[in-house]
Length: 115
Image: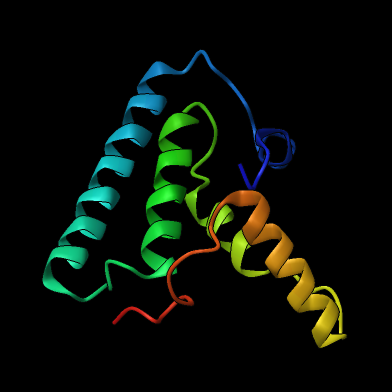
């Protein structure tokens, strides 16, 4: 995956014993997934876009790691900020392309704004 659980674990508390909190997070991710699917079905979010695959993959990641803090947006930010640490545009493009190839997200279009 394109973000490791250890990176997120280091940034927040990690307690597997709180089942109620895990369940609340799973409900949250189900609601977010429902909204993304509604946006896909109405055409607000293009089906073949990179944004759609990235957002749904981030929800999958968060749902699979419901014992951690809400982390789907961390996954999105990690993905769209690849190459932003350098001022060299070519190097930034190479870093982003390598990240996309490594993560299997080299499909669709660039991320588009959502109204």
